[in-house]
Image 1 (spheres, rainbow, N blue to C red):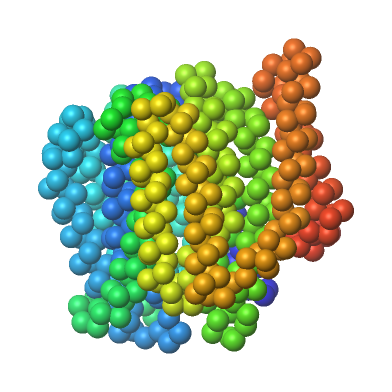
Image 2 (cartoon, rainbow, N blue to C red):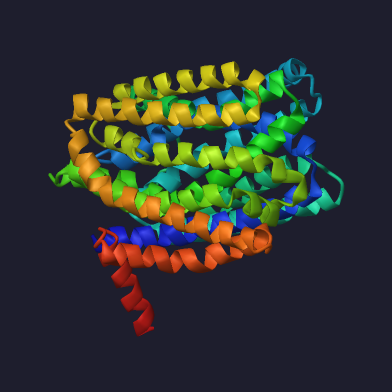
Length: 479
């Protein structure tokens, strides 16, 4: 357990630092580029990033999960990722003009080709990264990710100031990937074989196809609005909706970032050592929900002043979308680790079927609701989130024996704390507005009151997070 806590600590520091660096970058970029410019890049990057889920074909997760790891398996995983990732890179390069013509945006072609460079580097980043994760060496990954992120951000902002517009976002991302490759090469496990082989790919591919399909569908839920609205709407609408969705994704992914990379290795280790993996899954989800749900409830209340503060006046129209999307994120968070559980227990096919049903429903809802406005699309997110919760709960109960009643009882304190935090945040914000203080003062009041209130609720209700909070407080006080 000590190694898991240490891994979570380094993973958390890495991801949180990256998230806040990303926020600082987004705040600057949002003031340097227009919604139309950001919308253009969002369309192109949404398509490429969804395709990126196939470039590794699950080889990284396979290496993390595999009980006995040999040089041959590592070399085969490298060979598979080279075949798939390079093939996709070539495909993206060749189809760039076709996609640009489909959206009637010439700039998409060059953005596609810039982003395709990362596909040719990916195999030599993902394999050593997975091996470091398997060994819980998140300290080295911290260094790699932070330096790559800083280079990405500084390059992006510098190129925007030089007049490269949305192309700066593509070049910044690509140059950051190059730096990541250089650093991960330095920190790779010394015994790691580099030379790929193209035999013995069947076992990895069978696992990877399901894993990649699931990740493709899961990411597609987030990127579908950019692709659909980009075709049936305008680039400005894409920019505004993606800003509201991006704000909530930033909040939720910031809370998830430190924990998510550790969950699959943790659950896989529980299974290898004969522990109760279902219990570990429920406990992981409850701890996450105790953090994430109250934060999202508060974010739904203060979405307007938060977007105004972070991104400026030209983005305030996205605030109502963010409020609704926050509820979707809460529903999705209940079973956020379900894919990790299914992978650890060998139910990859079930994972793909479940994600496929959710994605299809989500896609159809966006198409049906777009004619009624972007707020209707945001409401569709909530409906698909509820469907996701119900479908996943049924699947885990039917095939993995995870009892819904056990989940409900374990989450009851999260529900109570979230309701209380939401009501308190609404009261504080409304009080500031009634006194004529303005939305930013209301945001400040909420930010001052809510951390202490949340902490008091955790302690009074003896939430499972209480021991972890007390451990952190003791460590801080000793120092």
